[in-house]
Image 1 (cartoon, helix red, strand yellow):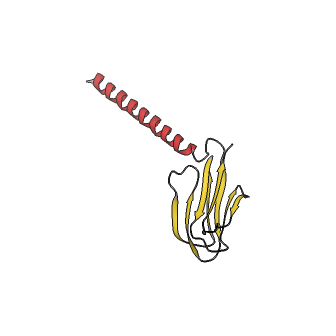
Image 2 (cartoon, rainbow, N blue to C red):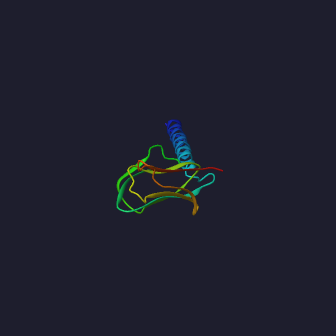
Image 3 (spheres, helix red, strand yellow):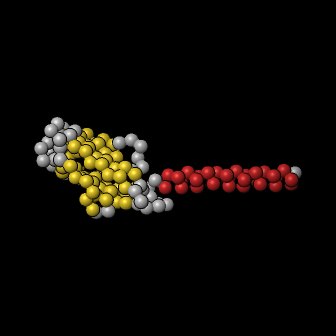
Length: 127
């Protein structure tokens, strides 16, 4: 009886160790994209102008762009990110609308709408 109880405790301890190691690995991988285990930057996406606009944006580490369909201008989003691609765009922008991307407080890109009213700012941060 005592041998079976010892095996059961040993088996539970092994399972807990394996689960803890797996959870730690998942956490490390998810945090690596945020720059926790490497360089990171504060990225600010900005759209200025009058009225409202449909804004699409993406920070590095994100797999799908986000949409703010009725954004009131001026519009900003800020996030601390690891290396990668950051973007903001507006379709059918009113005259005078401007997009900008700042990295660690420094202006890296600024664009005005093209003839069709579309504008897009893109910045890749890396080591």
